[in-house]
Image (cartoon, rainbow, N blue to C red; front, side, top):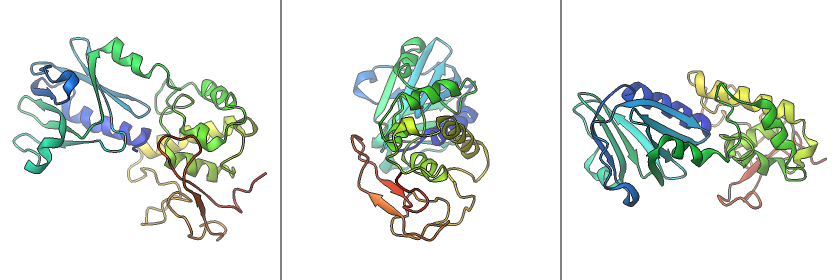
Length: 265
């Protein structure tokens, strides 16, 4: 599943392509909104909260989408189209007059309505470290409020902090030397959240830094533990371990850690 920094960069790409443009074609190919015709609407903004993407229109309405595991967006320049075999998978088509087209492919979540209504869809989420309004104190308190919940599960909970997914949860635990099942109330939440904000912002804004946690962009060397089960830790040489899933996680995501750098305490 794409993480908050991935969606943040996607929003910037759509912003460059479509913001300020009037739509020649605006289709939502999902049952709930199949009768909507967004042609003639002017796009005024693209914004994110965590993993959620919002496209705002000048008439006070908003398109809300979420990529989850299957979705993606692609942008093609004026006069071009996507391959014929991909067209049945298009859930959203936003074509600017005399300009590019944004295609939302296999999007599992497509909502459209008044902006206030769409904003309400993320009202339950925690603060987003990529937003200028990020409330670090609220995020720290949210972490500590999880008490004996394993920190790896807390970091995956979008109600605590919106944006980090499995990659960031695992890499942050390594970088802070945390055994993934450390109770949340026992971690230095201030330092953890500060690192989360700094790392995700660096990932989203620095060229070629997207989700590179080691500083090494070479293939197989960009992460400390994520996806490296059985390989030697780049810091101490101990074999990286993995368990099949985070307990209680509906997405059944894996957890990786180095038993020496992240000892059980």
